[in-house]
Length: 357
Image (cartoon, rainbow, N blue to C red; front, side):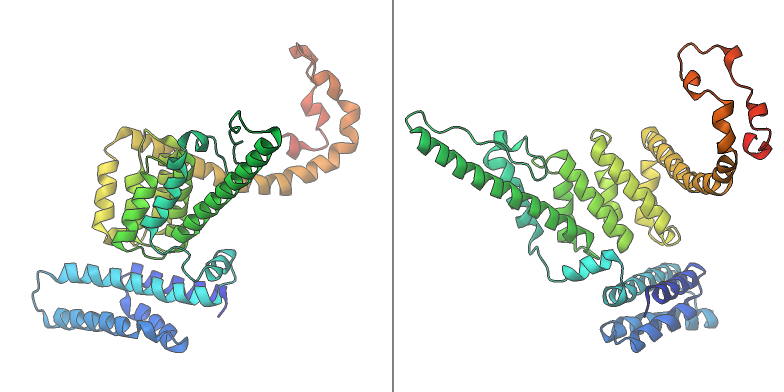
């Protein structure tokens, strides 16, 4: 199966669920499970389908059930989540994207216990906080000189050994940071314990702000790759106006997540309720407005590039042989250029009225 075919199937499933037409979604999911050997999802598929049939039966019979709406909402969420699992498994097998190439290369867990792993990372700073504070990625500080009683040769040798060991430790530390980043990125649905550790990472009082921001980006990438409501809740929790480097990344993650999964969010009252609470804060609303404007500008940039390429550049090429003779470019750059010295632009571009306009 190609990436294009898989994407088409995914879109069909989600479009059917968005329109509350579950039968076509079940048909596609059943086909994918049976056709591509995904028997591990068969029992889950049958249970969801059976629930759907019961709801149809009770509706046709006119049976009153005050819990029906709640059950139906839960059913829709279950279809979304099963679709995520099926499509995710197929992407892991067939996708040629760089993202899934990397995920396949890290298919064996590189981190056992995230809590223990975080402690090891924090220990790097706690062991010698004064030395560690100046660390940057791939950069280790100089070591302190030896005792005054050592010979120059012994002191130099010891200093060299200490520096080599410290550089090694710093290098290993950076590798740990990268492994943690990929671990978060390629986790589909974190358990409650795992999600608790992710929160500990971004609220750590030991890790530098730029590393915590780095991990917020990992949560965002993980959310955009594979939906899980807990990832959105972590981004909500991480939004803290007192730490703009971190909070702005969290807000970007929230907005891109809302855009990516807009149609399904109405079935998650926990998320919509949290958003309503957040929007009571005027600062939060202003930040959202600024970010949306930047998104809009970035979309306009593509249109502008196309217009420059297709409309302006051909006209510039057409008039370029005559332009230099008509304009003294050096004089235009002089300071104090008087208004009466401005060239007559309309006359200069008379051969290209479209370009002048």
